[in-house]
Length: 510
Image (cartoon, rainbow, N blue to C red; front, side, top):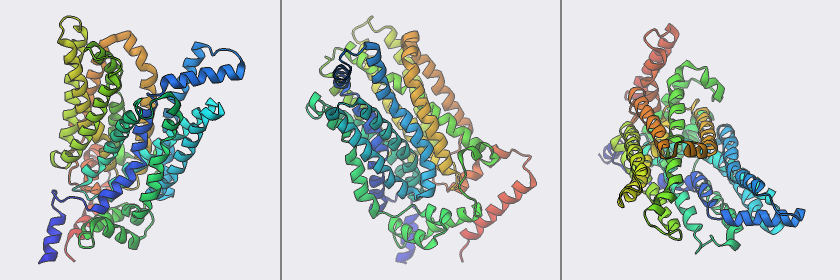
């Protein structure tokens, strides 16, 4: 009787994750997307100090002052080379996850972070700004790999009724990294001029933390069984994550997926583009990834300082108010993690994009009439926080979760490589083009983002099914009609029916 109650409890959507599962997500996150958020954030505080370092180094080396245009170019390289490194990391991450395993790739990735921290820390005492550039490139590679592999690991260790909430660990640690970087960069901590090399090299601490804690947790059970064929290690890992009395249901789910794949090897990214069976999943990844980056969130942060100043906040206090934006992102990531397995993915992401469309409209109007009434700047300020909240509840939190759920084991690493590559290219492109867009359109740039958010919301409504509480095979079947239509070839129909028969056979009591 007690055994039956345990089995019933394991299928309940309200059941909380085990401590092992929760701590594994934390161990993965601290050296994964936390690094991405942290290194995006900390580069803002020492901007003026690095400018001074570049001037002094150039004068000492060449006995003449650094040209202002060249100074701007060098700073742009230091800031943007992080994105180039992230792109390289995204291209490497999937292959590393296949060869080394999810856990092995994350552990190896920390070596890159430690090397990057050493180079950035040595740049000032050696007077070599080239080390700073190299360090930023390497920490970009680290962030790109972590951004690719962390969601893979979390998505594969989580039971399906908790997969959304646990996968939100990716966004929670990313926003936590941004907020931590904002706090550490305050002048009361490491924001003073003499501490900027230490600030940039502090990214080694999350790397050491992951090297210390992650080895205590097992490899992804799906990777062990489907990719390595190691059923015994898979069962041991599942027992660690889900408990010795509750792991069987997850084991059966992995076995069904392994049987359906029938020994299929992990695919390369270019193979997905020619695979009709994942056509609409791939289109979805492209639309959601680019939609997330081009949604206007960068424009919001660009305008934040101007809006805060217009609302009467002094320049000295703006860094502290900016902490509020980081806190907003953390709050929404946590809220999304609590809601995603109850409300569902579709409602949250569509609702997020529609709310962002609304705030783009209001913000365009408030910025246009900023000087008309004294209370209008406060409306703009409210829109800043509302947009960030809507982004966190929708595209900011759900996008990576959905990518993990739309593909089976053989396609998932390649899908993350494609999604990561598009994300970093979009991030770099918007960083390069955005100043010209703002200069040309002023506040009306938000009308462009309004149209983009509306389009993505409509696409998700028409194409993406709800994935809550569904196995990876069940989600694949949802896309079957979209991918093949009514005129499915005989071979494809037989394969589909065989998968269903295997599913029903494994579900039936032995």
